[in-house]
Image (cartoon, rainbow, N blue to C red):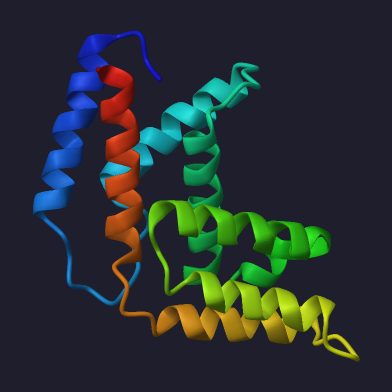
Length: 157
């Protein structure tokens, strides 16, 4: 991701610090520092005109966007007119990260939008997903941070 070894080394140290200081708080305050550091670099590359991102980078960005929208209760707005595609992309991303309990929640939401007659409203589906995700016992932030750190470490080797 980066050609500057000092930045990479600093990020790896940050990843280690975050992993050692996992929070038990139920109030979501944003992505952990490790995740934010990797996302910032991705956003900077995108802003600079980069358009080639690895599968792992796309997985991370998709999972982070979706999780932030769900935790901030803005999932309906995030999903918008491309809800089915975004739900499917999030399913793939969370599965790649290893968040196996999240995937069925998203799949059921997608089924409600596509296979129920009449389809359930996006407002109701998004609210249901947000509620289900708020009750998950999976350490979502930690596993996303672990994934971000693993991807950074692979790039640094």
